[in-house]
Image 1 (cartoon, rainbow, N blue to C red):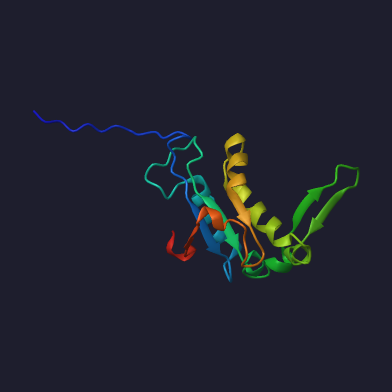
Image 2 (cartoon, one colour):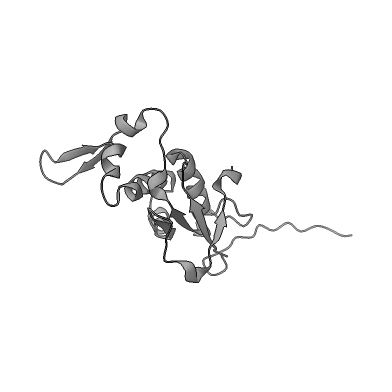
Length: 153
């Protein structure tokens, strides 16, 4: 009698097939872009997804300075940070952050970090994210493939 054997295949760090992908963030909404990037970093679009392993892709985001917010979030949303001193709580809006050198980087990293698991795995996944304000990046040696993020759900 023939029987089918269904085995759950769990991959590990050595057997994970990681790729390099480039995403153009021009005119993309921040939250929607970052939720798809978080899924790519985690590896959820792959059939071999394993929850406790870094099996996602390395993601390069270009044109990060051209991301947009919907509604009035550009001026009304607040990012909070703390200097460590008494009375050192500081607030910034996305419009204020964009005036800084790495403002768009901080906006995207903050959004993606909140969508990843908390703990060691989430912190290591953030090392697979590379964000650039312009179209130039220095990862050409990895031969990244350009993907259209709008095709992902």
